[in-house]
Image (cartoon, rainbow, N blue to C red):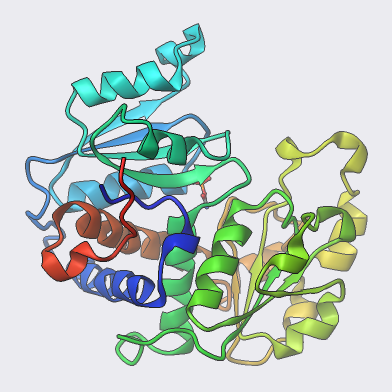
Length: 324
Ligand code: CP
């Protein structure tokens, strides 16, 4: 079985193939008729136990553009609220013939459990699990960086060698940061994390990146600066920094953005806390790729679904094989 559980499972060639395939998918999006027949007759289930706007909608759009049948499942309003387990939910989906299950769950490791349980036969795609990983977010971020920093056509077949990426904010709770550190370093980028000491994960010294507490010092050396959302909902209120203190030291405003090289971009996975980690001036500026990232998310997720479910032989090697 092929699954996409962690960005750490992807080799450099896997990742470049996904990005190149996403560029092909983006060309389809530029056409008047945006659909491909590739996954006709296949069923993709979006299984969301946690809230989502971008990821859920873009997986749905991606599957539909590939002509798959799509079933959207949200834990809210389902029998999960009556206490139904992940196993029984999975067996129900299996009975409905799911070829792929895209899962978002509050528990780190839930997609891995689903992929290795034997409860379902289909491919499993991690759409964000707890504070662990969000691999398709990292892929769409890498796609956006490659387009902006290398070029749309020039980027084909290329990685992000030598690019300097800074990831700023609530790293402790960020599955986006974890997946990006894995993927961006696999693609040859140099990654620096900037965070308040209380929001740096234990064991970060074993991650393949630098850590800094001085945003102003790092900005002039960055090709892309990724601002993370402060995840109040995962935080003990006692440790929650005041908005004023946080934004003064770790927020990106117009004055700070001016310290970045002219070619450098500001990224944000969304949803944003405007006024906290990013000011409205920066969020709405031409240098901020947040909306572009959402559009790129559809092409990237089309590529992932295509390569897992419908790709021809060369594509089959894309995501690491995991035996159930
Ligand atoms: N970036 C991201 O995962 O956004 P959603 O939570 O809206 O899916």
